[in-house]
Image 1 (cartoon, helix red, strand yellow):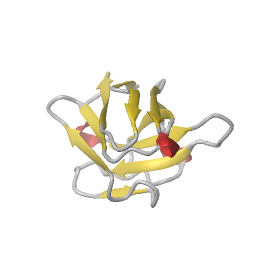
Image 2 (cartoon, rainbow, N blue to C red; image 1 turned 135 degrees about the vertical axis):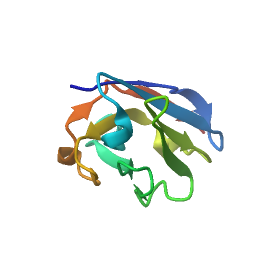
Image 3 (spheres, rainbow, N blue to C red; image 1 turned 90 degrees about the horizontal axis):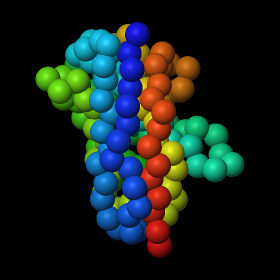
Image 4 (cartoon, helix red, strand yellow; image 1 turned 180 degrees about the horizontal axis):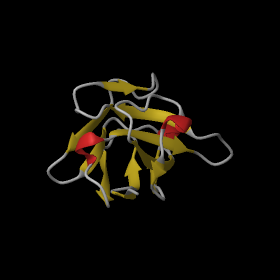
Length: 124
């Protein structure tokens, strides 16, 4: 069992930056692939970014490519989502997720464990 806790969300102006953190307990993340998803009010949960178990391979949604970066710090058992050049359409509840598989992919069903989410609000 892995317990995930997201932090770092908040209110930011358009063009600003935020860094989300996802701290894990219960298991080491060194063998886990991770992902970030988000859900805006009235919309379905959507894929944001993913990283494989080794931290060597990443993937991003087209809407955030070039602006967001996902990374893993196995020593701290934490995964990060660096968000730059924020836009109002990035406003959502952001979730991190993990899987025991080497790669989780862009679909929510590829992940086994989920955090409770952290709210990101971007004002125009």
